[in-house]
Image (cartoon, rainbow, N blue to C red; front, side, top):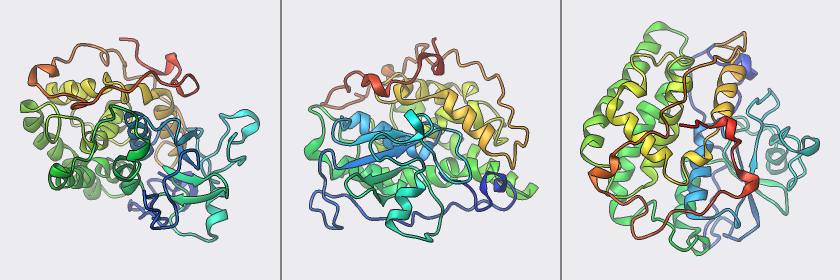
Length: 341
């Protein structure tokens, strides 16, 4: 997620088209692109507001990569110069020493297309951006970083299920992950209606699937669940109102509401979610569609911790593995940014 071509005011002023990742180098076990997997060498830059970046934060936590891949959390109020590190002392990332993520991009290449987006992985020794390929980063964390996974880490991209996972993820990406943005940033009525209809059509197709099985593919958590979760957890908080995806709230769909609560209550998912960052980013940054910058008081966040009964469908969240341990103290989401019940 990055700023529009005309800065934050540009959102909603022209038809939405998601930029392709320009920096697609991969960090692999064999270092085929010149970037070998190495503990402590790289830093993941993310925003807890951004669903695309949050995928990487969830994956990193589930796989136990906290000590191997450090995390920089950007201020949710992104300005026209890019994601900034104003949450840190003196407004600088303590590891990279930079004020704006764009500085790492500039060290890699000048006049790059597509803007500055998260997630981004930066090479700490050189300060250069390695990749902003949001579609590939999490797959590589699951398959290329295995030597650094925690004991008991789940297989988030099991080889035997990859074709089905890829199919489900492609459908979810087109209609849901990206669909909410096409609806929210639409500039014509027909454009909005088509995108919004697509969002709810896909959610309605997913409902019977998730009514009969606990997870999207197989009987354990996979990459497909991570990618759907990061959109669904934002649905009622911002997409329903801010992006006008308001045919119904997620909390009004018994199956999907239970599914997303099940994941939220699973270690590695909800403990990475910051509702304050989410709401403030969408409502204060997208001034092209919310020029006042007013952040609504609602919706009521109660219910996220209520029983979901999804375990009755079977399934084992981590397969033969185990849940991740406690969140490192310096990475914990403030209590008042989370639901209490």
